[in-house]
Length: 48
Image 1 (tube, rainbow, N blue to C red):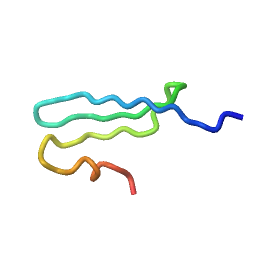
Image 2: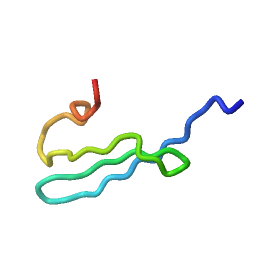
Image 3: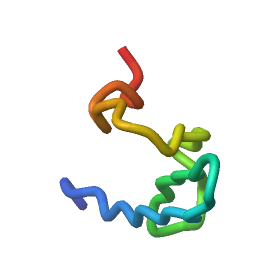
Image 4: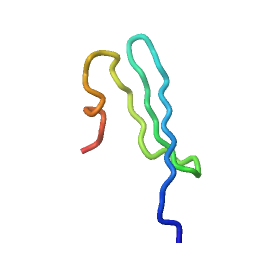
C-alpha cells in the first residue's frame, strides 16, 4: 500500500497577482487559486 502523496506546487508570477496550483503525481489539480501580489500573508490562501 502506498501511504504517501507526492504533490507538486507551481506559481505563475504576475505584476498584479499570482496564480498558485498544486497537483498530485497523476496530474490531478488538488488546489488552484489566484493570489494577490501584496503584503497579505501566504497562509491566507489556504482553504479552511
